[in-house]
Image (cartoon, rainbow, N blue to C red):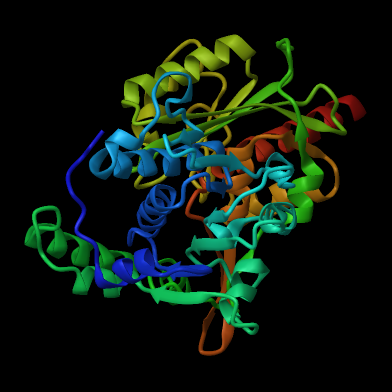
Length: 440
């Protein structure tokens, strides 16, 4: 664990010193979660017998906050950390003064946090929490008159986080911090060198060029914007993400969609569905790998193809993706060469030589996935990371001289859905093909 001392910005020091309900609305990568983790550690030390309940969208996010709190305590108050049966775990901290911190993922309904009592409720990535999660989580404070600390990057003008930001009842102390402001004003020190500062500024400029004005405004300026909307709403996610992983594998009528990490990104996703029942296709597996070599990703695709006996495999082989080289190798491998399909959001190769192609766009893939979910043609796993990915997807209408030109779809945790849109398209096309064969 890295114990290098953090030098806090002025706004971070204000939050650490403030006593009361906190709402932190920021651009990305400014240190908001680190700040609330340090604030939590300080609270635990100062308030014996207190309880902090931390809620996040996923278990991994919840564990990360616990790690950050432990990191602060080990630097500044290591003698207070309990040992033996009360030593820290991935989701719980108990100090020798009997103060505790418990982290829970909320999932779709927030049921995982029901029944707990706390003096502080920390809500991480609050803008992307389902409304039911807030309903379940806030009663944690009912009998303690406790505090709510929430932080997030915006996700459109909707939901509890946005309504809290309006602060009509003056319930919260609001901090609104953009990524640009943090990068430009953060003082150079041992952790934040001049070189890192210049690289960060160059990165922001590149992001500004790559993104639409609205997308950049939300992600890095921390703005709530009318024209950005969720693509998959909470009701649809709750209705369709209901399946458990099968206890045994049916080795027929399986298809796989793969989203391969782009250069500089960490995670690839492998999404498998079974279409034995043509009217109701079911997802059977969602696998995410991190920081894999291209050879490891190739091996993963081949291993999963052999395990599930996948009939077709759709992979992202577009520009900026490592999938181009992987596709070329899989096209020559006897395990995958008759099954692999290049899907690069522009065209799909319908044969192994790539001569015959079907024109298709990213919007078509997303529209197909949404339609299949809405019509009950596809059901997905009850998987917290998959649900997080669905919630991250947003869209905006792009205009030129007042005229609508296209729809832009994006997400900051989109890799799982990117795998799903490919496998959903393949499964639907194969179903249509089989129905036609049966008819003739």
